[in-house]
Image 1 (spheres, rainbow, N blue to C red):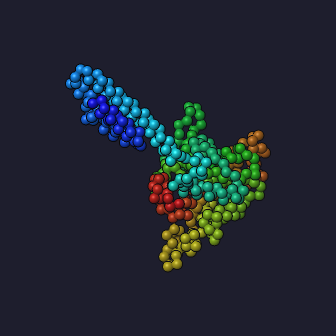
Image 2 (cartoon, protein in one colour; image 1 turned 90 degrees about the horizontal axis):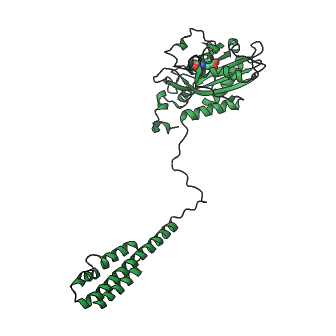
Image 3 (cartoon, rainbow, N blue to C red; image 1 turned 135 degrees about the horizontal axis):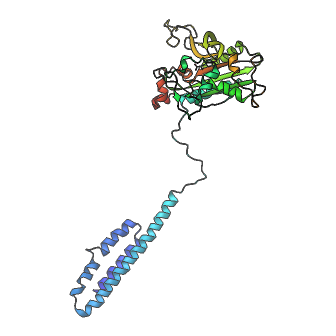
Length: 359
Ligand code: DAH
C-alpha cells in the first residue's frame, strides 16, 4: 500500500508541476484529492487495517495528501501571479501616445451659435460686448428708459415681478436688454459702442413667443451720430447675416426710449425681395412682402441721458446737448428662425436631438 501511495504521489506531483492554468490545477485537485480519488479513499480505509500496518500507511497517506495540497496551493499562487503579469503586459497602456478622439462630440446649440455669430459681426464693427443682470430694477427696466408710469408693458400680465428684500427697489425679470443702455452709460464715458446679449423674460407662450428668450442690445453714443449711422451699421449686420445682396429699410415706429424710433426690415433673402418665387408663387417667408422685420431701433431719446448721473466712472457724462446716439434691440431666436427656416420657437427649448443636430 505504501508503495501505491508513493506511486500516486509521484504521478500527481508530476502532473501538478506541468499544469499551466488555474483551471487545470483545480481539475487535478479534484482528480487526486477529491472525495472519490484513490488517496483519500485509502485514508478512509486505514481504520480497517491490521494494527501494525495502520500507523505506517496512515502516516504515508496523510503526508502525501498534505504535500500535494501544499504543492497545488503554491502552484495556484505562482500561476495567478504569472497570469496577472501576462495580462498587465498585454493590456499595457502607453500614456504618452496621443489620445483617441471621442466618437461623438457635442455642438453649440443653434441659439448659442447664432448669438456668437452676431457678437462677432458687431465686434468687427468696433463694438465691445457687455453683460448685465437678468433680475433688474423697475428703475432700469422702465423708468430710466422713459416709460410713463402707466405704460402697458409694466402690467403684471406683461412682466414677471420678483419679490425683493423688504424696503428695497421693485424688481422684475428684465423684459428686454435695453436697461443695460443706462447701466453701460453709467459705467463708461462717451464715446460708447457696446452690444449686450442676454436672456429676457415675458409671460407669453405660443409658437412665436416663449417666456424666456434672447436679445442683443446695441448702443452707440458719440458726437455727430445720425440715423444714417444706425442704418449703415444695421445694413452691415443684415448683409453679414443674410447675404451681400440684402438691403434694409426703416419704418417709423414708437419706443419710449428712442426718438425717432424705427422698425427695421431686411429685404427677403428667400425671394430676393421680390415677394414671389421663380414659379410665380407667393414667397412663404416674407408672405409676399419682400421684406422681413428683424428688429427695433432708433436715436436715443435725450430724456434717457437725463437718467444717467455723471460720476467718476463716466465723467464728463452724457450731455444731451453734446452727444447723440442710436440703439437697437434684436431677438436672437427670430434671427435664427429667419435664417434657418425654423417654424416654431418652442423647438429651441425642447432639446430634441433630431432638431438640434441639423445646425
Ligand atoms: N427693447 C425693445 C423690445 O424689447 C427693442 C428695442 C427697440 C431696443 C428700440 C432698442 C431700441 O434699443 O432702440 O421690444
